[in-house]
Image (cartoon, rainbow, N blue to C red; front, top):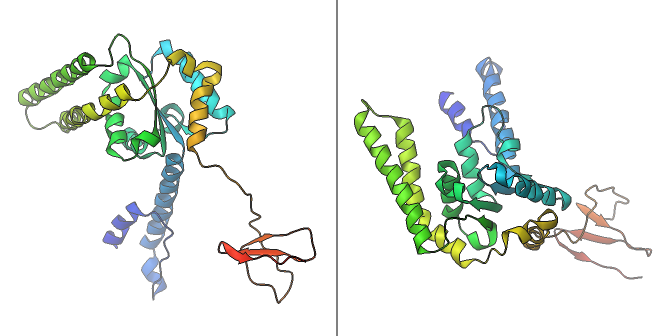
Length: 275
């Protein structure tokens, strides 16, 4: 039962428990069922978030208006989005959320100079670039002056993170015992240094346009680009099926034409009878 209880922490589907004796599920069974349902709901929440457009950014009051323009543009165009201030709930795991950003279908990377020296932001960057298809998933907005988008800028950022790594190593040597917190930070820094070249190559060679133009009119140009990458629905189906005769096939979806006969579609195949 303990092994079964532990296995349910990773559940991502409905669980049905069948036992031969009723008392086997009491009293511990109830807690296991509750745990499985709780895990299921959590997985569904994550699945829903992954379908949204995630916003990876570093908070800076100077860019509040730009961030609001992006959010307003997403709302105006009915594009679901995820941002930490509204999606990280009380006592949620922040690192887990950062990993979700890396796995998301679409990501807006709002890159400013402080972003490049933020451990949390740059860890999000490593998670984003860890996954494939960056070219189609990532929408960069770049305004990182005074850091230049060339080899000099790359060296500046690399030197910064190498210094952070050295500081973390010194701290570990001075402290008695092992510090999991410092070790975790060191692991993130190593991942950043490893991913920096690929990240820099992307933001240097991808034309991000003029920053001011990109956020004008509630980020209209950015929204247009995002909309172009999102598959659009072409047909709305009626999901309910109402049988109208014993001779009609059992179908999931029904489309009715204006004539005497009906058009039935089942499992994406079917026949059209024209009167």
